[in-house]
Image (cartoon, rainbow, N blue to C red; front, side, top):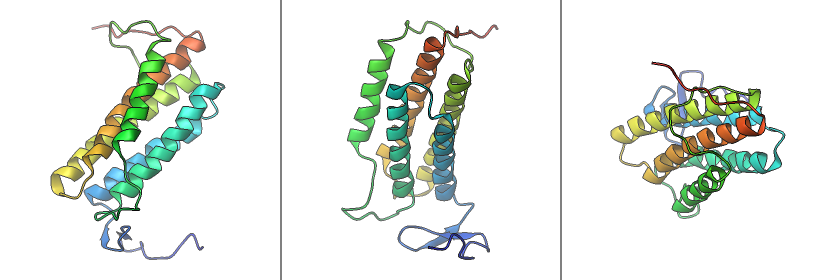
Length: 178
């Protein structure tokens, strides 16, 4: 398979059903931003913690499903789509990680160890991906709302995992001053 085709040289791209759309469309912005989250997660692995790395790898696979879902305006029964089970999995991760942490009582500044900071960065980009998906959903009816919920929960788990990594690294959380 060739990496370049020249089909996108005029600012258009193909959706999964081969419809041509502008690379500046809300749909492309949404799944392009999901791709950014995925790339950041790839840059943080390995964290040095197998349990975290396993979940980040699963999240990266989930993000590919989100992208496929957003790229397909009319999915067939066999096409990859985000399902409630994906959301349930991420919620289970959050619940398990929170057992390792002290309760959150104030806002915290994103940062900490190198891995913790990178996961916070991924969280912030995930929130942007969610905003892009909401914008896309406001323009088109063919959006899987569960994929948007998934991005919301994924940003929550990334926040929680960043806190876990920083705690394991012995980095104290800092609160903002107002």
